Image 1 (cartoon, rainbow, N blue to C red):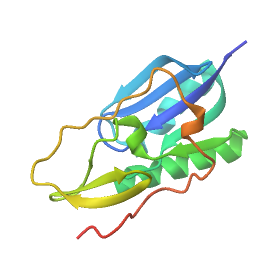
Image 2: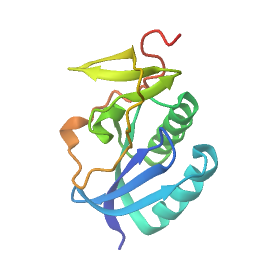
Image 3: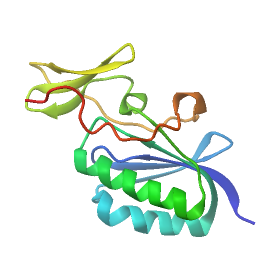
Length: 153
């Protein structure tokens, strides 16, 4: 019998992070520098052989437009085909609410519950990390990607 798990995807930048959670606790991390479009099908082929996936979670942005788009389409399709619920949250959940690179000196920042772009002269050091314990209440069923937030120009 396969272990029942939840799978979390953070594919907004390199490396891509995939977390396997059992009873909300991180039990396995998959990290790769490969492109989402090439590696997600391979990773999930292995995950689905090894585990019984009960829920899917992902960071819906802001971040790389193409990475968000590819991840959303892949996970939404998997959710429909395998009847696995899909949930999402913004990327700030995975980087301790640090600014996220937009373009040039513009960064996405989260102030309270609002995400805006701000010009920052000094690029902050920020990296995405999987949480040790998955907090369901930080995610919701609104899985629509955050493709464009404010003016980026």
